[in-house]
Image (cartoon, rainbow, N blue to C red; front, side, top):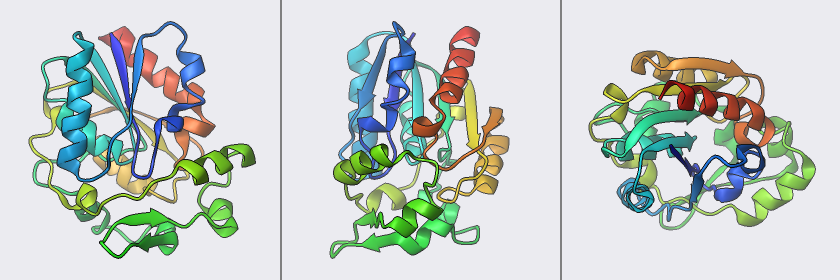
Length: 223
């Protein structure tokens, strides 16, 4: 089983920098999506899955969950792992999900560009409130590599969700101030996911890579 890792909005493959050494000889590929629209990111990730040419376990963090929800319809995908990630239903958007709940703490740090694109402002206050558990040396890497996200990644609707017919695991971040924990729990329950929880912020792959690996191994053993 080949593991395909999909980052979230503003993310890069370094989202998984703490997890990759733990994967050892488990075959894996890191996706770098353009973040120009949900459709574009789905198409790009699907091309990676098709290039693998064998059974795939998709792992998505944050917005990456919306991507794998759609890519997972590929016959090559045998399982889905959501890490503090969106799991939209058919016709839902990322924006539509979060707007049903009170604003997350991260919203005060979100900045919109002239063309509607989004990027979070990583001030000292941001790190203290939103990513308090991310080591300082990792914060600098994140700040350097973070990219803007086109609004269409949040506003384009999802097709038929793969989690309706594909086995799914969900790792909830229990102190998340970016994608609030209540939203994660609601989405995981709705999808019937095998669910577990870990403490900490939204940066779960960086601060709790061992917990992410545990869920991946659980999925691999089942599949």
